Length: 73
View 1 (cartoon, rainbow, N blue to C red):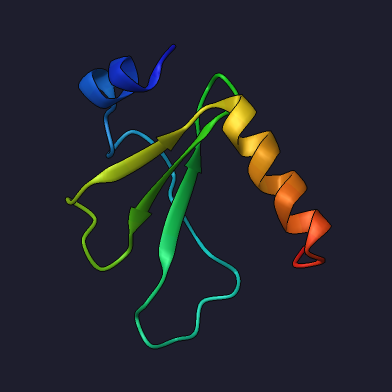
View 2: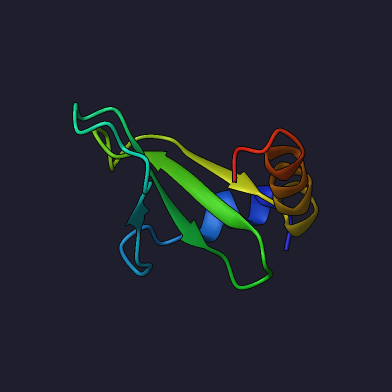
């Protein structure tokens, strides 16, 4: 499923959102949920009805690889 299809059919209330584990406690954090195809979606915890960013499985793998390369994970 591509990003446009997710954006058109995604039910933000039908998934479990997780808050980032490195949240600073000041309200500036993101929430993430896994998608059925192995991708993930991200939203601003302060604006749960606002925009959602969708990432494909390939984008997820590239993100994780980049974080590991920078020793952030």
